Amino acid sequence: MRSGCHAVKAPLRALAIGSVALAQLLASPPAHAAGTPAIRHVFIVVLENASASATFGANSPAPYLAKTLTSEGAYLPNYYGIGHQSNDNYVALISGQAPNPDNQADCLPGYDNFEPDVIGSDGQAIGQGCIFPTDVKTIADQLDTAGLTWRDYNESMGADPAREAAECGHPGIGQPDNTQSATGTDQYAARHNPFVYFHSIIDDTTRCDTHVVNLDLLPQDLTSAATTPNYVFITPDLCSDGHDSTCADPSRPGGYAGVDSFLQQWVPRVTQSPAFRTENGLLAIIFDEASTSDASSCCGEVPGPNSPQPGATGPGGETPARS
Image (cartoon, rainbow, N blue to C red; front, side, top):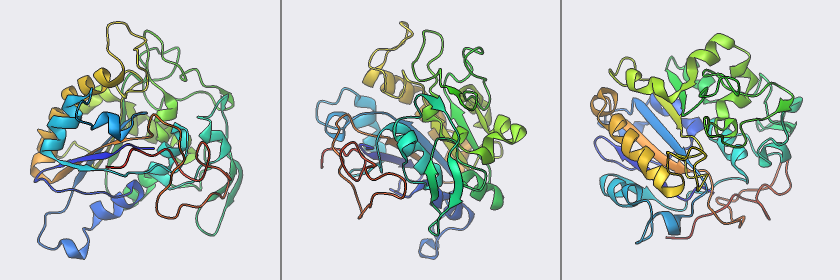
């Protein structure tokens, strides 16, 4: 479960919205927002495996996130995931697809196709597997249709070229996922990069290579509003997202120290960029799940259509402590 959402906006205003709806919001602001400048650039950073009570408590081990950033923006508690473990929540963020047994297991042992190719009346793909068929669409397709730009930036992707490419980095279809564990030279995890789990993206090599890229390209893109995508999805690696308490690279911190180090480096770059400052940017920092294993859910979530138990022991994703 995501332990909370920290939203930073210029000018400051809290916003909580599902990713799949962002394309419509960017294309045309809602009527009730008349007189308020439209949000033109959305930045999303996804962190890992931390409870709200620990992360945002009085003695938080991540003071930059818990204290500095909450003083600059808005802390939104009770932000729920829809399943367990990680990959199903990432997939839902950009497609609205519910969990299935394969992506609940983080696509172990392999990077396999979702089968069969059947779409239910509610838009949910029926079956199981990890790489969704071409007719399952994502926010990327919505943005393209609306004439808006997007890019997915992944820290460490391609750091070891023998492990994965620096653009559109993913395992071979039907092959084991060698990115499940970090190495001393490469801490990228494909399962935390939802864009490589859709044939509508990875089958178009040019589209994927130009949109699913290494985080190193973000500073250049931030130099002007014109070169900054309308939708920016940022995936830190296993040392920077809090997933690994000890970084496989001994020169870098893991856990909360890795989270704070990453955010201190990248949040100012985003919030001081021309796109954020002059075109009404929004930054949302969220968690995919908490460190506990309860299966609380939100908003009347029901199991299915592919998994009778999306959470570890029940209907929902892991949940933060109430606040």
